[in-house]
Image 1 (cartoon, rainbow, N blue to C red):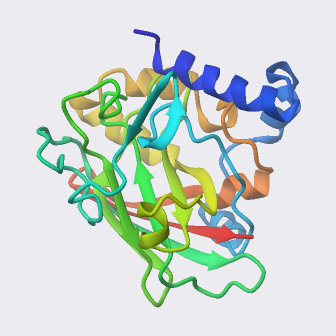
Image 2: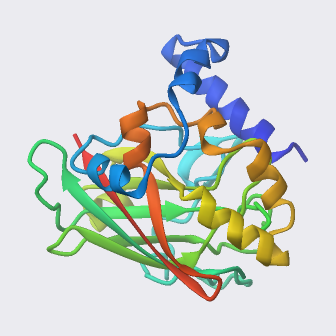
Length: 259
């Protein structure tokens, strides 16, 4: 089986060719992703900066054809849920790792107003860097959808993801106008991804054996060398989930701004 990095890179190359941008022309974008900024700068940068469109990646299971396969969990019983650590719809398996309570706020980039009733579909890899339904075909854990509340916030109970070769720790997301739009076949309003506070991830990877080679991968592939984030440095700061907690459990927050 091809490596996660090779599969992600192939997906990115396909998208770049469609847009008329060569992968080798990515140097300027990568150079603009400098060292992680301070927590204060992250908070300031998160204010209403439009979240850029990013690659969907090869493992979405959202009905799009990726890597020669079409998988779709939309409409499956149990997809709409807060705790995404277990499999659903009759499949088996659960994801182990450091617990993470995540609160993602959806706002209008033009006004900063919270966006209520939007549907956010989130998917991520497990502690070893594997994706359910693809690397783990018997399971569909670490996938879920929630509607934003009146405050624009969507909450998920998950785990801190692992770090596989070629990518910094991240989660993928799609935003739809509503749950009905998502499950009714309507196109998403935004496809993007969020990075993680690397210092906290390094602590976790160092302490917990279930994260396998994540620490070594993170050392070789920090966020400023991640090929798949296309935004400016300011956007990248706003796309970073701020973590608070310890090995027993973390909370994480980020703002997703829709243009």
